[in-house]
Image (cartoon, rainbow, N blue to C red; front, side, top):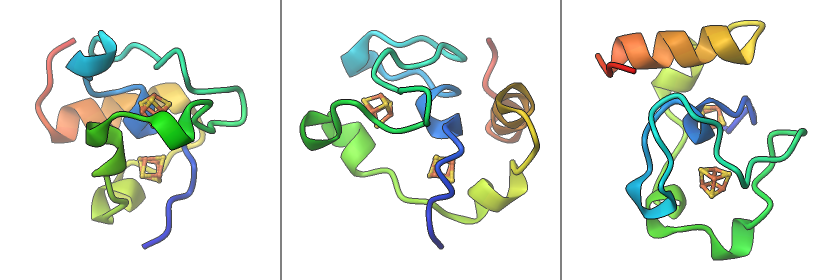
Length: 77
Ligand code: SF4
Ligand code: SF4
């Protein structure tokens, strides 16, 4: 499936190589939910592929999408 650029995977999970904590918005995610360092993004971001979860977390707000993502993966804030 195609990425809907909902921003959730750049907010919900922790990304240790970026020093990003769970639920924290990546500092490289711009207002249009685009990666501002796309060409130089870390391997973990390069390896991420949209899948069925993207559809499952679909919701009007980023907060809602992040909450659902964390619930699905049983990640504690
Ligand atoms: S959660 Fe899925 S749809 Fe949303 S930005 Fe990430 S890959 Fe794209
Ligand atoms: S570096 Fe880019 S792709 Fe990776 S989490 Fe941050 S905004 Fe998303």
